[in-house]
Amino acid sequence: MTEERNAYTAVREENGGNLPAADIRAAEKERAGNNRMLKMFARKWGYIVLGAVIMALVAALYAAFVRDTVYTAETEVLFAVLELRENDGVTETSPTTNKSLSDRYMPTVEDHIVSPKYVNEADKIYKDGGGTEGSVSSRAIALNYDDDTLVFTISYSDVSASAAEEKLAAVIESANLLLPDYIDATEVELISVQNRADVSEDNGLVKFTVIGFIGGAVLAAIILLAVYLTDNSVKSKDELEEITGAYLVARLTDYDNAKNSGSVKA
Image (cartoon, rainbow, N blue to C red; front, side, top):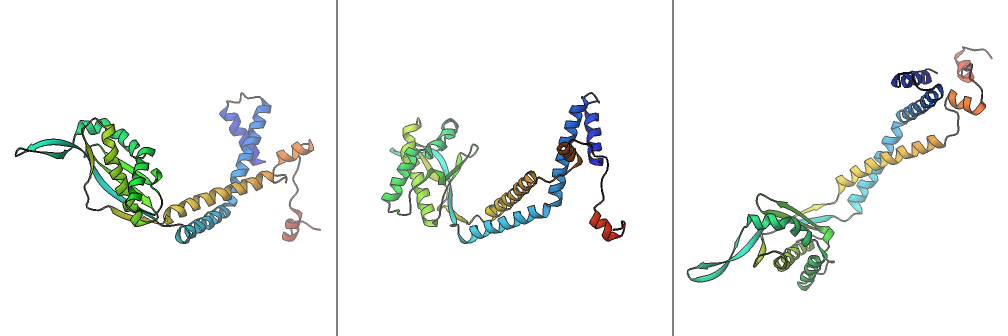
């Protein structure tokens, strides 16, 4: 009864004692019900932790032994404009950075590189070069542009390290072929500032373990909540009064426990 009385007092104080008795009673029941649910979770926290650990273990095993390792080839390229220059009477093409041109086009260049037209061209370049490990996919391309240096990082992920490198090279070559049609310049080029792309591998062990842990905790909590809500047993005096239509005037001690402790006689 103390729980219901405290809930009643809190609701009344929050509303300045101005709510009708029926509304206060309804709010009291709702708050008391929420408190009982929170106490249930507090008592069953071990099940939530157990569910989280089991799912994390399953996810870790999947990442370690079932899921393919993903290799990511990454390189930095410079967005440059090719200009015609005279050198000792000879006209030659020389790359130069152009800040205004970069600021104007780079926000949308990234969208172009992952567009179907550019990806299809990259796939054609990859296969014409003898590539046989699948097709180039826009979902495997990642780009990050640095406004200050005019350099952006471009990467490609694949289940094969060699394929990741080859497809990354095809994506860059595709951009070099098609970007001049889009940008207001005679010719542009993505110039690699590295001799070779960096290749890293990731089996997703940490990511899948964390996701499994969180997912397991949420799933266990949902199951506990479902069991709690579908439990038809009487959990409070309010529920008993509502079911019977009568007021509770007394509570009986747990007879079996009281008998065992000697506080009552049979």
